[in-house]
Length: 136
Image 1 (cartoon, rainbow, N blue to C red):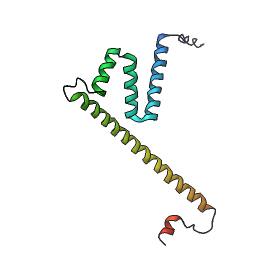
Image 2: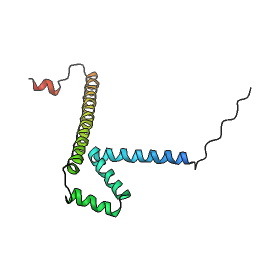
Image 3: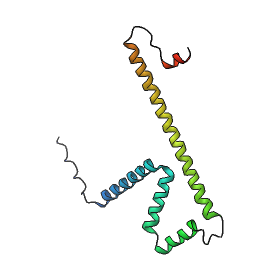
C-alpha cells in the first residue's frame, strides 16, 4: 500500500512563521544583553529602550524630571520601588555568578587531577606535587 504524500510545507511568508522568528530574535537579543551586562544592566538597557521606543516626548520629560531631577516627588515610592527591584536584580546576578564560578573551579580541579594522573603514568616513581612540597 503506497504512503500518502507528505503535507505541503507552510508558506514561507506566513504570519505565524514571522511571529515565531521575531519571538526567537527577541529572546536571543535579551539573552545576549543579559550575558554581556548581567541582570541589572540588562534591565536598565531594556527599560531605556522601551522608554525610547514607546514613551511620548512629554512622558520622557516627566521620567527625567521625577527620577533624575527629583521634581514633583511627593512620596517615597517612586525611588524605593525601582531601588528595591535593582537590588533584587543585583542579588540575582550575584547568585548566578556564584554558581558559574563554582562550576569553573570544579572544572579546573578536574582538569588538574586529570593532568597529574596523565603525568604520573609516564614515570616509574611517585611525583612530588606542590601540595606535598609545602608540607616538607
